[in-house]
Length: 424
Image (cartoon, rainbow, N blue to C red):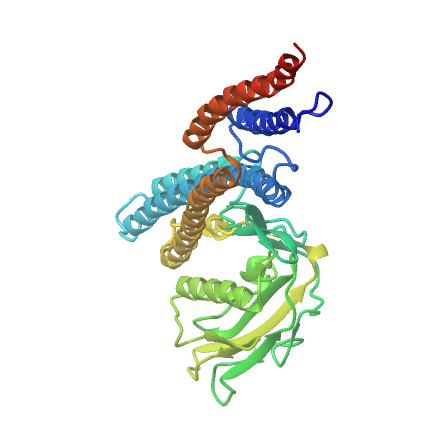
């Protein structure tokens, strides 16, 4: 049945043309934006995933900047540490030269002083953006570490930032100081509160004390006193005008073992200056307890007293503070300096090695973040980017369909006109 009121053919053709035009609009949008999913209405699930990943990409860009800054800071510290090691090696050469008695030790000492001052200048200049990793004299909790933002770790429970921790390595040349009377709040044991003889006839050859707690600014010192013999008058308040030559002021991050190692190095250096060694006096450490072992030689009648001072009576010195004690103008000073310089060189070597290790880690993380960012960008593109080859082919097909749809609609609209022939 034909009708002039209802044209079913035209309606079908019109709906088809509308569908083609809608597909055409979608395809043109993909071409203009380059995206298959440009908004949430295109595909809400894929769009949501892509936006989360895009936020992560921006976050990793900030992390990359943080790693670059951290790498530059650590690089400066490592290079400075290596330079300090070279300067300390030069000082060792001067000390060895001073072993010969037929040399001008005064001039050698002048050269050593100049090299020492140069070390101070290098350490002072080893900063990047105001941060100096070669200075660790701040007693504030956590001041011995610097955290470099390294990654964003996403899990089912949320997002957390992870850091690469850089430990400061102090190479300052300022010596630590201890003033005032001891309080002994941080040490205990037999050698605390009174001197204990550890050498000589009919005496116990060991004593001990415990390092009970360690906090920044607390001073630890060992007083050695002696009667007649090789050690007479050595390292006492009367002979030095100081509490003790063997002393250490803890810095932030130190442990009981760090305190022991520092005191032990000081003891070895001091003994070398007296022409003595570990057979005459030595220390060992286990579980927070320091055991002091002497000898039974009558000539080395040595007593030991361990003490501690609170932070109000101390000043934290640099890691190379003992360099100020190097004096090669006398034979005793030369002997002590040779032992002392070995420990100082090892300190600077350890610092350079530590910075080199963390620099390598930062560089590896930086390369990983760069690759991860590229992978995320590629993943986002896979999710939302339009396939331009496919879209181009689809556009051409839709253009043909559109033309055919228009033609079909035109034919359908002409059908009612054929009814006029029935009334002629």
